[in-house]
Image: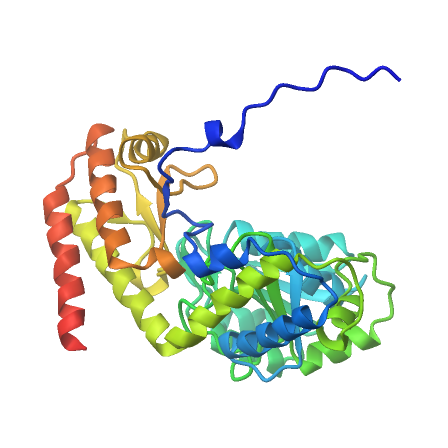
Length: 401
């Protein structure tokens, strides 16, 4: 056989920037050194060392999910794969599903349910608003629903469903299994799986947990697991079959080769959360996000979402008329080595406040870069006023505690 000439490629050293960008967008987020170090290790995916790691990952995950469930599983894939595992195991052809749609990612849950044959009813939430329990109950009263899907925070447009606990309790009262996407919220704000009657919690590693992309977590309640074991239709997805995944995660058996490096990274990320404790972590995120929001407004920019429905973990910013969000992002990246996010077809900006993003030194660098980027792009803002207000809010919270 005559082999073709091999392709000429550029080494990564020549592609990656000399100075890494500060990742302050909607994810992935910066990761701690211990997480990065763990991600460089490869071990036997079926050995005793891995079994010990998996057991600790489950214990720490129960703390972060606030659950006593024995059905915590890792997923070799992005958070969307965890979404799909929840949906394809709980929804069969003909299953009646109520999907609460705030934006792109909540719509993805509805699409996944439709693809596996679910009879999906969509509750569209008005723009820039949280879903109201009254609107949810009005549809639940029509009867027949057995699965409800909802996001705690809609990453795409920075809306927070603030009444999540009440909505899930309503779902349970009307006979639903509640599937909740916490991809951008878990460990940044309270999410109490057991107390709130949540039946499937989905998250990715690359946001609030400050781990790597591509390894995710899911937890099922006992009620959800009973539904999985009793399902009538065969599972179309082999890799995402929760009963097969359970063999590895809870029975020390083989499913497929686990992403061992990613699981080690996830272990360290969870360990750091447990060391910090959830109350301290929630407070850090709340303080940093409030200070950033205050600085943005004092600078002269408008926040996208009203305070009562505003997500703290991803902050949406309206861009002044005549100014390009992409141009601002380009300036911030090229001049200040700070990367934030745009949106999906919207002329807005999004700044992440998840995990390692919520550190005061990252706030200062990001707000300075934002102010400069807006001014260079043609917007009228007052960066010193924004910096002063952000520092005032931070100082007030330090003094209070």
